[in-house]
Length: 244
Image (tube, rainbow, N blue to C red):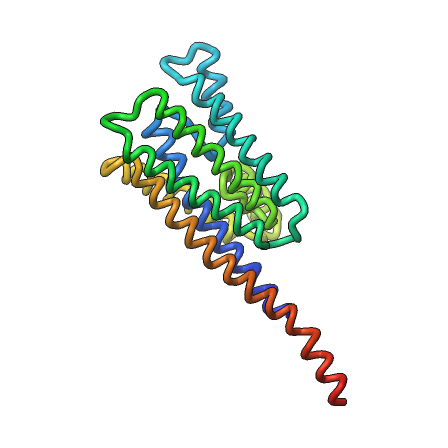
């Protein structure tokens, strides 16, 4: 793969991970506002909510944050195992992991849509646990791509880096654009997720499922193009040597 092609692929991966950051904002808004104050992507928020609940915080949930933490870790562990022997960067297994996220979100959207009346306690716990599991898969797969400062699920470290390495702090301000975009996009995702709740509880998950599916299609297509180019390169070099 040429240096220019590699740069283009890296930029595309950045865009795709930013899209998933927006999607996480949507999913977390649905979980927190629509399903009893549970974060399904931002586990830091869940730990804080759980701590306040254990200290006697008024009407704060305990069971669902615990389940979300456990299922997030389970999803991340499964994805980590599946991707353990995958090559660096995007691969077929990466596509499979993100595809599993899209399918999982679509299934959860359908599950909620088919729930009669208001979502019951049991159905809500199943939904938030499932959402946390697919977000764990997404986080692990995104980590495999190693897009600097874009984890897709948290922005605390991104905000820290944006401020501490800014020119105002005496740094060089490198990566400030992607850091700022990550923050803005997860914020906008939360706005969209909250807005979809005015229409239907399942809608935000459906939006995230469609967006994730689009990320899979674009990312896998680029992976196939890069693979084909890498395979063709030695053949072309060999022809040049023969011709000379």
